[in-house]
Image (tube, rainbow, N blue to C red; front, side, top):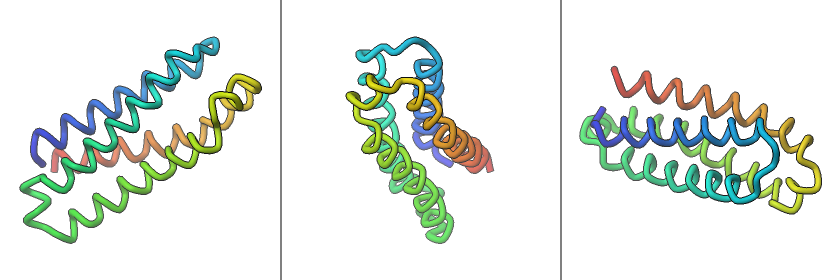
Length: 120
């Protein structure tokens, strides 16, 4: 894969790790707002990089598979964030922390898969 795609995935993965760390600490509204927005922006960059990756462009089936898997991860994050508004998070921080565990596992799986695909 192209270095741009690899870098975009690596950045998104790092932001996701920072978000996980933030949810394991005391509630910090400002940090959570920043990291949630940053992760959405990072995933948008990954989407663009998938479309522009010269190696994926040569293999439309692989590009489609990569896009599908990426959009599933992106949609899961969007649904989670829609379900958990900042008011809901502030009112029930412990439940929010529990709710993020499934999303974390799915994101970890996606990022691990995507990083492996980048080195193939």
